[in-house]
Image 1 (cartoon, rainbow, N blue to C red):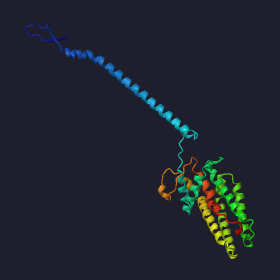
Image 2 (image 1 turned 180 degrees about the horizontal axis):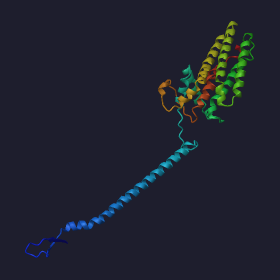
Image 3 (image 1 turned 90 degrees about the vertical axis):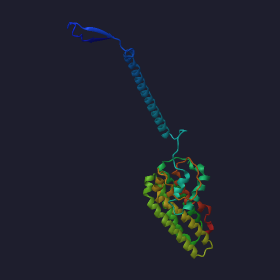
Image 4 (image 1 turned 60 degrees about the vertical axis):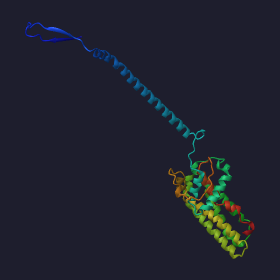
Length: 301
């Protein structure tokens, strides 16, 4: 109810007033009555919304933390069945290695059959530090070269004795040097020495060829062909020794710049072995694989 006090006209005494009752709108009264009660649900809804948002964010954070922990665990545990090997493909690694060699086609033809036909060797029966793979591969190569030089030891040709002695001397010193190296750091310090020995070995090979040709041996053409093959593989091996760091960097580069690598077709061979092991097989086989397929006859020297 609203009390309306109005001034009385001049006929009434000044101290008297008239009270008049005015009926108010019922709708306004209802709104006034409901207004305080409507604020409570709004406040409760806002609180529930904030609480739900906090819970949702907490769950998301916990989920992210859990997933990160699982990924880190699997990344540090290669034996996990869900471990993903991110090493480059075999085909790309071979193309990268061969792109640094002067005889690329010969390099690819040499590497592809070896890896495909000898997958058991890729697993390696013994384990050694990854940084020493190139050292071990070079030691194996020296063993194979010694095997080749031993072919002529029992051949009695006077014209070849001098160059045979020099070649055997170089191989023996090279073998002793490589056998004494125990880690990759020391091996890299001796790379220049090994390259010099390769050059001297080529000189002695040429001296043997010249003297054999002067002797009029009918085996000169066959021997010259085998020496030329051996030199091509030695040339590729020398190129790899000179470019070990660029090769490894290019294989494991995050940018897939395959356009910079030689694009001749090559069959991709899948292997779970570390891609750097292909450097082992490159140096181990590149020098001697084809030469062993066509050895120099013992009667030729």
